[in-house]
Length: 331
Image (cartoon, rainbow, N blue to C red):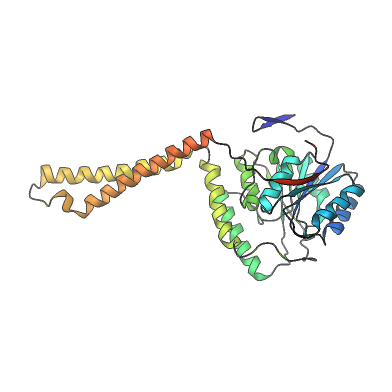
């Protein structure tokens, strides 16, 4: 089966059962234990697999560890960014390189359990879900992280209409066609299920997964997530509904505001000319300036929609990430 992404044919018929995409940044301590754990699960279930470690510009010995793992097991592959681009960029490059019929993402800090892989794979292949998202029902995180997470998840459910409890869980499973049909950029890794939904993949499921306490290192996410999270959610919601047709959003608002302003002008003119000739001059009334502002804003909104349509039709949305090194990555 072939799909076309950016005019490039992607073959969805392959021999690999699973591709595991692991974005990482300064995780050299946890990688040996994680790789051993993944290999054990795969061998016990007789899966054919590949593990794609995407090093997001680590400053420690993460890449050296990946090279050692790849030398011992060719199923372990690596991509190293020239600098730190963020988790979304790492996932995107992993998705582009993935070849397994089911793609599973997990974090490198050992908080996601590879023991969940067989059931995630079964839900995709047998239950025919497009996406299965992990739900860390019992979390080992401080309250400063759990309360904002609950708030974000509630807002995401309301805005996107997807009934998931944990949008930001790093442990997820996808059909290969899903990851080849979406683009993850900025900080959109939090909202991949909505991106999949807006791409036409509506069978989105959820599985309660084990959440383990961090064993090595420290969290890589700071206070900026409290600002970026809501902004990214609004971006996803807008792009999903109006990304391909911005005129349907800005144009409607612009026409409505212009119409309101025009009606006020008509009312003021009719009153002055036909009803009360002794009324104040139109330019002396507050309603005149409200009408003028509404018409000006209406025109601006309409032009914003028009410009958005032109940009959308004539530009590529693909981001470019500089790759420093690769290991066993097939073109």
